[in-house]
Length: 303
Image (tube, rainbow, N blue to C red; front, side):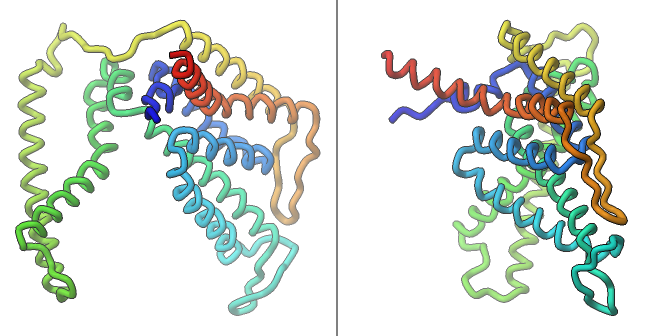
C-alpha cells in the first residue's frame, strides 16, 4: 500500500503559515480565557482529535500521559488549597480535602492538557521554516533566536544519542553492569564531544549567515509558501467562527465560581451558540486533514 504524502496526511500543514498561526493563536487564547467546564472539555477532546489526525496511533501515548497529568493536577490541588464548604475527608493534621478544590484542580488540569495538545500540534505544523518565513522580515534577529531555541532540545538530544552510540561502537561506552563512576565518566566524554560539536556548529552557522548576506539591506528572501485561494477561504471561515463564538460566549454567562460552593450558571441559548461555533472552529484542522486523506484516496482509486 502506498504511504500517504505529507500533503495528504497533514493537509492543514500545507496551508499558509499565517493561517495556521492564526488558528493556533485563537485556539490557545480561547483555551486560557474561557474556563467553563463544558468549553474546557470540548477544547480537550477536539485538541486530542486534532493531534491524532496529525500523528495517528502514535499520538495515544502522549494523550495517555496527559490524562495522568490531568488526574495528578486534580487530585493534588486540594492538598494545597483547603477552601470550600464540602469536605470529602480530612488528612494530615486535620486539613480538609474539599470538593470545590478538587473541581478547581480538574478545571486547571483540563486547561493545561488542552494547551499542551494544541502546542504539540503547533510544533508539527509551524516548523522552523514556516516561523522564519512568517516573522523573518519583520523581526529577523528575534525570529532566528526563537527558532534556534525551539529546536535546541530535540537537535541536541539526537546528537547525544548518536555520540553515545558511536562511543559504544568503538568500545568506549559503559559496559553492561558498569559502576556508577564508569557511567559518569562515559557521560562526561559524550558531553565534552557534544560541547565541541555545538561550538563548531555555531561557527559554521555564523560563517554561513555572513556569506549569505544576513542582515544586509536590500537582500532578497526565498519564500517556500504562497498565498492561495483556499487560504483566503479558510481564514474567512476561521475569523467568522471565532468572532461568533467570542460574541456569543461574552453575551452569555460562562463564569464559574468554585468557592465557597460550586456555582455553574445555566447554559442558555447564547452559550450553546458559542459552544457550537467554538467547536466547529477547533474542528477545522481535523476536518481539513481528513478531507486531504479522502481526496488522496479518491485520486489513487481513479488511477
